[in-house]
Amino acid sequence: MASDAVLPAAAAPAAASNDATMSPEAMRRLQAMAVAQRRRRRLQAWLPWLVIVGMFVVWEIGVHAFNVQQFVLPAPSAIAESMVKWWVPLLDNSWQTLMTTLVGFFLAVVFGLLLGVAIGSSTLLYHGLYPLLIGFNSVPKVAVVPILVIWFGIGTVPAIITAFMISFFPIVVNVATGIATVEPELRDVLRALGARPSDIIRKVGLPRAMPYFFASLKIAITVAFVGSIIAETVAANKGIGHLMILASSRFDVPLVFAGLIVTAVMGVAMYVAAVAIENRTTGWAMRGQNDQQVTVPGV
Image 1 (cartoon, rainbow, N blue to C red):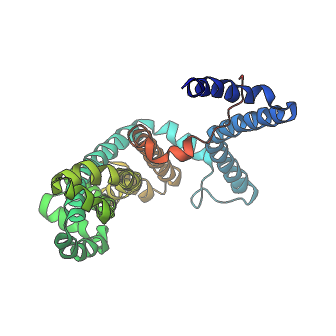
Image 2 (cartoon, helix red, strand yellow):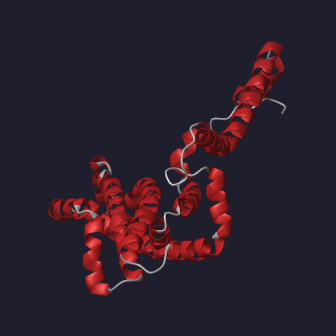
């Protein structure tokens, strides 16, 4: 008994002595790896901005070097001048596009999540509804907009419905895949323990589907803007798409590109918001990527 009591106490100094017995060369290697890791994190934070700035610099130089006409491809400086000149219409129309996109995206999230859970948890629904969903997604949305105009008239409603239709399918497919791929052995064990099908879906299926769900959100929020812009170019009296059509009719190409850049900025902002929510909600799914850190003893 005395020897058993001594073993835990002796194990702690042995483990604690690893740092003390580490050679100076190994310590220097660890410190160098820690410094390299900090530099890599700083580079990752600055890299998107460097790439964007570099792209605009190359764009500006290329336009002037090859003497490209403004009605073909305006320089970033001309686009910036147009954004400053028309900032009030750009702001007003971008708010309209953002509102319609968010409403359509929210509806796609609600109905896509519910239908994805239903399809993923039922084999009959999976085989019965999947061909219909594939056919629904295969229809060009720009061909549906005139029908929506006949039903709802010109305005906001066709843009909302188009944003909903184009972002609905990725959410349904990913949520259904996440729930349907729960291991059969795990289902059998839970059933043996007395779990009901609803308990399996709520406690295992939904957490399992969350990484798939957020992956689909990052796709859906970007394509939702595509749906809004398509509807606004065909049947709207307000929005970035409507503004771009007016600008192109006046051959104001810099304003057209300004509308594209504003749409891209809104899409990136919504993507970043989705990533932030994903990291706070399902960070456990990517812990292997986030935990690769080098720790230096004594630092």
